[in-house]
Length: 214
Image 1 (tube, rainbow, N blue to C red):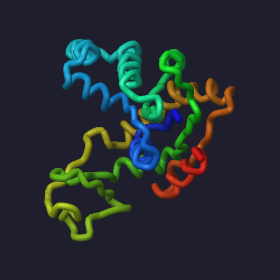
Image 2: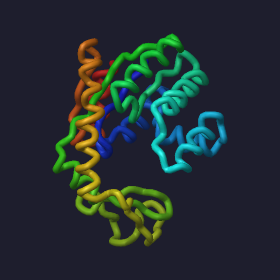
Image 3: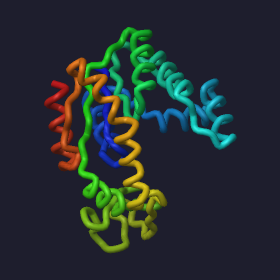
């Protein structure tokens, strides 16, 4: 089974993909993670991407597609793929079709995690993590049991991502609507698009994904 998870940053794609990996034995293909790993490993595509980033340029569709192609080539045919954060544009959607065909695969589901923009702003701007173990918290929804002390490791040091602010979140939403949302009609025409309330609880979203995949 091969699926695409769509939704703006903060919609919960990464969390749900991790659960699908555990439950179905699928492989999560997150282009951001794959890019970092390829650069670190010094692969052909990684070196190419490193040179581009060193020039301060954006990594091209060709490089991202090559990462996906390489990864699928290393996976057994019995292992399903979860595309997280890819495709982001119509051009990438076309490239993905070609790559899948090359590996004898096809898409089974495209699932969009729908979000409310104002609620998403609240979700993202309030989150912070333990600087030691990475445990996640939120100003309103999940504070440490003891104020200022991590529940998991007892550290008293926390951090926030510098881009977790309202202006950046709304800019990401605008970019998602402009670039990625237009990808959906391509798959809607094939009848493989489903939508899930991304603002529901994590367990509720997981159950909804389960129902779609089964």
